[in-house]
Length: 239
Image (cartoon, rainbow, N blue to C red; front, side):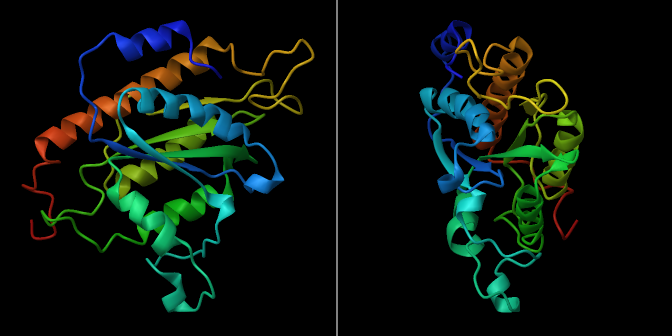
């Protein structure tokens, strides 16, 4: 989806300074890059474009392009896995990002299996603390983007956003968006239709929620960054 005129005006019509913020988008499609284009990536690209046009440094990872071991330890190679890209590829980006956005397709009404692996690996860092003694994800913001051909955007977002806030992420208002089209077989997001248009690209509801989500993530991340994160009173292991 190309950014609309209204979205472009929002990018120009403000004096907020988002420079210094970093964001990581993790695409949890089940397709590796060599297997074809990702409908989830097509939706994520607009949020990425908005952030980059506003000075946010964005990194984008596609989970299926890497070998992620399943489990709830920071490095599963220490627990019998033959290979694990989490410690060297994913964890440094997640650790340093002010904003984390999970993008996932819907399969059988749920987020993808790779999305669940990412969530479980986030949970693997539950024992780690930041320099205030809080859980390591305190002071960071999280969001979720969903695509598919069946109902379930709110259900999948609920699952992902709950997990993120549970491990310490701050979830802004309207921190999710998605597109599902008509129920049942049919075009997926971004597919070219018979008239040459792209499925979902003209959907005002999806465009609006994507805009809300992206700006709210930037606003809350900026507020937290300027405040030095959340106050540590009452939410450290020693409390």
